[in-house]
Image (cartoon, rainbow, N blue to C red; front, side):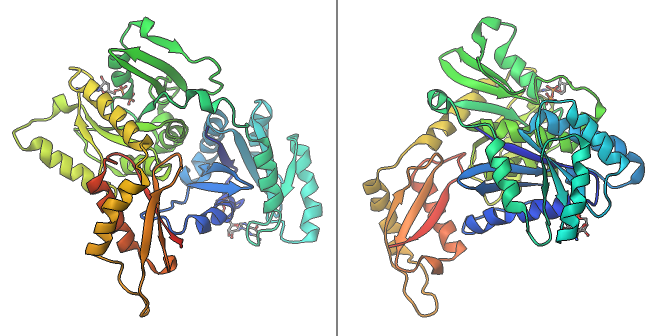
Length: 435
Ligand code: GDP
Ligand code: GDP
């Protein structure tokens, strides 16, 4: 189950400073992960064994004064819809402003869990000043200094405590959860309509779905999986929803709930920055992915078009390019089921366990053929490798000097694993461990 915490608040209260502060502990832990670029707006926090996603909604809002009020209201609105917990950041230096009041008013009206974060409490005097924020009428006020870190431990304790507890995860585990994601207008709804059709019999709502995401058990034509869709089925309320901010935020929830994502792309537009952002969210969450180039009916083609397209797309997803690409049309229904087949194949890849003897047989040869380069005059010996019993594929290489194995060598190992076993569409992690 996913846990999403959204940071809201007006500009300059310190949202991005707080975001950086809170995601930094996690950064240290995942330091040895390869090919992961962190962005400013979305990060993972691990606190007392609980992991959650942190989103700085403010980062999406452009700074011109005239749109402030309106865009902050939109920001809060989406956070209310999508997040499990909202951190409402206010600034003790400036005190309560009109904008704070109007945000508070929105938050008071909903049942979402909210923590008020009084930021810039750098000293004791300011801690006393912060009591004024209780007048916002939102339960708990936590005082922090994002700059020096004080108070953030208590804040994280509180957040972790009020996050929804893991339940009923186990039962659904064996049914693949497939999501259709992509920026607005790529054809998500059309694809879902093609899949689901008007035949409501094949669709049963999953009981106990507490959130807004629409999950359906898809049980037809020999397929059995859960189709997750948020962005696609939801009615667009206004034009603003076409902004990247919304599509990314909405994608977060959908991606976190899924095992495999069909990332829809628009054949007439190619891969743009927004597609890459969504792709990165998928990869960062270590979910399976199939690239689906939709609206293929609109493209003029010859014998080479598909291959050229495929290459161009994968280039944008480097270094993670071992992913299936399918060319579809939601209008002519071309290859829609092929896309599903690929998703289920990726699911199988993602859940497979390679026996230790088998990995070693293959990887020992690979390592002998090209051993890790010596570092500071020291030889690195990899003794054995095993796939870890984790939810998503991860391999641990046991060796004498794990800290001396560099990124390029880890990539070499990953590529060899991919050459020898089928992990297409699945991010894998490589760890070096002390033997
Ligand atoms: P955002 O617009 O809400 O994301 O705000 P920023 O994170 O960009 O911070 C706005 C300004 O407040 C910057 O100059 C920060 O250095 C400053 N700031 C942020 N947190 C603190 C804090 O805890 N104490 C102090 N004194 N300044 C802070
Ligand atoms: P969403 O915002 O991702 O859910 O996109 P929609 O499913 O609403 O599709 C956006 C527009 O693209 C609509 O006008 C669709 O009719 C059109 N569209 C979607 N898929 C295709 C396709 O495969 N081929 C063509 N020609 N148009 C498509």
